[in-house]
Length: 365
Image (cartoon, rainbow, N blue to C red; front, side):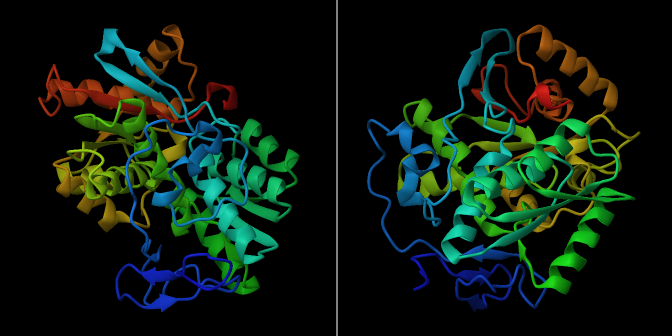
């Protein structure tokens, strides 16, 4: 751990170079690889028999590297059995800003606050930007969010009404990131990136902690989630792995990703090019995920998979979700749509115990 405010230092995921925790810390290693939080140096103890849900994500503080500085009471989203689909839905859209990104925003802004950062910069298609801006407002930290020019007005309003400065960028989602990175490097700003900042994954791993706690410390057979930059997918893997290493669960679930056709680099690596373009699932239109190799390693280690879903399949699934009472945004419909495909292919058996993440609220569309 770093000596600065008890905040974990950083270590390169590729070359193992270390960096002390600091408001001037780099957002990536000079070698170009993503950074990670330094390993926790305390034993995890026993699973909490009666979890203190009022502590939110920090119910599991023994497994986190980020101090609790900024919170809106996030976490402990419902886990709802859906017998007609033979699975359970983890309602990640039941969060202060309407998406699972609040998990990572809480830990990223907590780290920023602990380090004394006074301004953060992020790029996003909408949900992460709204979350970062909202938690920055709670922390009293200025936020600048780079977004696509065509960002949904509901998400733009969430950023601006929290006091965030939205910078619209013409072009692809990748070009939004390029413009943001140029600003970060030019202004020496603190990059609160949901893809690059390792504190974000410290928060998203708590989805796995909650799922297992809500199931009396029994891991599911499989966990299905949307997959763009992999912030929830990789976070879930890390969380399940941490619980397994601590001896709290007896297996790591199979990790199954759902990508949008035409924006599916991981699925295409595994299965070849996808057909068509899925424009409705705008939240996962990522062609160059920062942590690509880490995601592929998690898929391989858990005997998992990633597939691409067509726009028609997502529209059909979205209608079904809404009729069943789950008012989600289009992007998260890729996950239950993918479960149907995985079952048809025999990747998921008829009796397998499956948890599916529903990641964003329909109120944001």
